[in-house]
Amino acid sequence: MAILLLMVFSSVFSPSESPSVPSSNSKTHKQNKLPIVTAFDASDARDKGIVMCMNNAAVPLGLSLIRELRCLGNQELIQVYHCFQDELSDKSRELMLHTDARLEVIDVCTDFVDRGVIKHEMASKFRDGWLNSLALYHTNINEVLLLNVETIFQRDPAILRDTDGYQRTGTTFFHGRDVWNIEWLNSSKNMSYLKKLHAEFNFTGSKLSDRIVRTELSYAYNNESLHTQTSSMVAVNKARSGQAMKTLFWLITKQRFEPEPSFDGHNVYWIAYTLAKQELFFSPYGPSVIDSSRNDDMKNHPNTLCGSLAQYMPVSNDVPELLYVDGKALLDPFPEGLQNRGKAFAHVLYNPTPTHITPRRNNQAYLDSSSSSAKTFPIECLVGYGATPLPIDFASQLLRRRMFYLEIQMNVLTAMDSCYEFD
Image: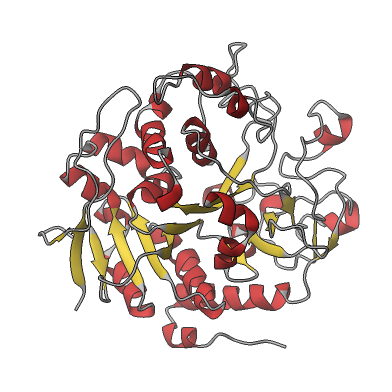
């Protein structure tokens, strides 16, 4: 029988206010509502684990990712977050708990509203990409791998915790596509929003240090990009995060609702760490993309690929190693959404047979958006960065993930017991 738990987590924080919720502790409480549902002994260690967010529509993507992680050898606790009961049905919860023995399903919005941490109106604003950051703040796992459900891994992502950057800082972040735009991080009023935020943020009574303000991490800070980070994978050791989690909560519950254009849900993690004066680690490599077979990238412009975002292992090995592809278009027959069927461009359609990827490269500012070559292609394309073959086992691992995805869609769950080892 499933154990029903309500856990008390971190306190609310604002740079100018005292905490208004009791400090976190390890007590658990039963109550009538079901914010947290688990089918195993909840007293198990929570030093390392995985967090992902789902609604009913995302269950085939998310549950197929869970099965893939198990086949890659990861046996850590996985917490599945959602916002209010109607976002994830009883059927969906039962399906996940039946499929995996090390799983928790957590209604973070009900939990925080019931405890008075945030109001219902505020909680409802997390029923989108912002839920990931709320889940990271809420989770009681120390070393968290926060994953998007459409991510396709080449190996167990827990390997990141063994890398030098993570060992040094307790974080690993990955760069997103560099897209120039005057909005969001860069205000339309002749002012960098990010610089304004840095200048006005006062955590401990002193301004942010010049060393951090002048960081070379972010092209967004220098008005060269719409955003800096992708949220497809975020690795954080919360036990070593200093004030970053409290700063994160302030950013997502207060600052993002300010009228001035600000940051999006992808960038909030590194901004929280920077404002909290906490050291962080970005992959030294820029984002890559795979080819879009529907767009005939390799036939029409083999030096410019336009498919799903991809990331290499953030280590300086002589032989680059692909870690993951953020590839809904590799799994979902209609990644562009049924409402856009017949109107979407070819490069964002279902991608059945990718063969190449942009070579690994050090992170750098993207081509000037005013250049003629950049204007020729959609913003998803990496113009002029070349192509190299995907790893030889990419196709077989993608096929396995697709089989899991289809089995869940077709409710043929007995087939999910196999890890389908292909030659």
